[in-house]
Length: 110
Image (cartoon, rainbow, N blue to C red; front, top):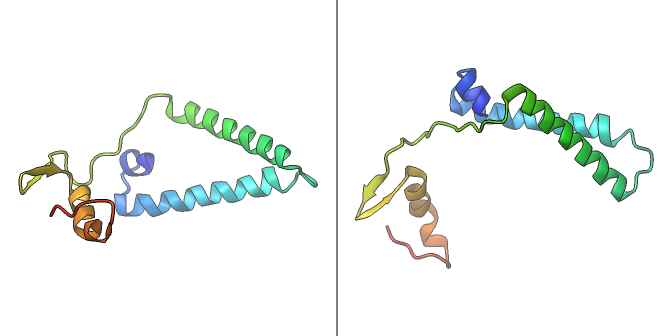
């Protein structure tokens, strides 16, 4: 998603679904070309095949993007919001506002 949003300039609203579609296609290709060709596999064989493909995917990603971490720019701003003496980010306050009163484990503070 970072590559689609930051490097390719795709808006976040389009980069997120595009990433979901891309990962789904990779999963379908993994199933078609790595899992299905194995005739009558045992559970251990499927696990080993899946781990092998995972190592290949990680190695390929490392060659393409390198080993340095990337961060996605904050979509709600870098500065915290002050509200009733509390500080937090927009998603945190929105989460409390929308779901806080439904939770039996948390205290509704807003």
